[in-house]
Image (cartoon, rainbow, N blue to C red; front, side, top):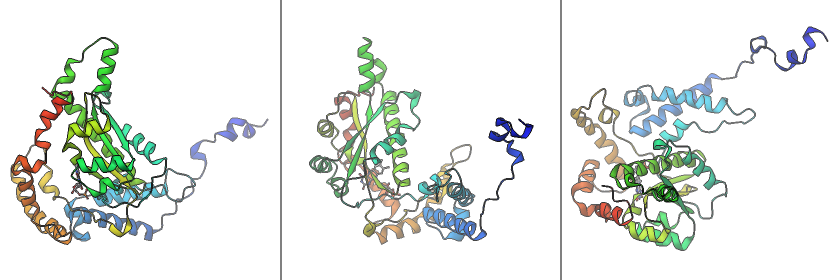
Length: 329
Ligand SMILES: Cc1cc2nc3c(=O)[nH]c(=O)nc-3n(C[C@H](O)[C@H](O)[C@H](O)COP(=O)(O)O)c2cc1C
């Protein structure tokens, strides 16, 4: 066997010895990505594309790079590497109209796998999710959640649950009563875990072309919902998530957010940043007018938080948590 013909020489040539084929990246494609990225950022902040870099410096460039990577790399043989995570996140909009019919069977396990991939405080994984597809149950849940049509009509409703019950079962198996499970800290951890899992599911679903909308109204009647879903003591619904294929006849637009100057504090909190909310008013108020919604954004914030009545039953959450076995001391 000659030196050049050894199996190892054939199987594993030194990487540097093989010329790398140049990746074709036509300039026009790069320009399109730049434009797409600028448009994405502009929509998120409700500004013109030429002002996108002022609204969120560097984000459009980061997105353009992410678009290039996701399309060109990672999946050999695939014509398209799938949407970039950043693109999915910046393009998020809640969807409240779905095509009828059940979802493909792989959707549920896929989004739950994404949810389970979220970080979890101390890896306690203090959450569960109840997947509801039964039309009669969906109608009953919708009635408990402010009679929202998109809950009733969704092919799938995921109810994210703060779940201390499973940990208590483990304690009981070992003959240990979990005293710390009764503290507010544990409830907060369980709510955080459930929320992080839910948001991972949102990004996963949207990356698959599905639409979602959260349903905070599942907390309007927590005890009744717990009974409907058969939740054990120590488990409470945090938020619902309706999932489905978006109805193209009711495609929502990206809703502008506050300017970064209003939300981003550097090193220490600066209360003066509230002044930047003024820049937001014309953008979001025009959006609401187009959607035939009354009132300015800041008025809506104030009205929503003015009195307990606007919480639609959620003002008694502490009492409900106690009744459901999460005393939250
Ligand atoms: C915790 C939470 C609860 C929500 N609850 C509801 C709800 O009960 N009904 C609804 O139609 N939208 C609900 N939403 C969706 C918000 O209204 C929506 O995210 C917000 O208006 C921003 O719009 P966008 O998601 O299209 O960007 C909820 C969102 C969150 C994060």
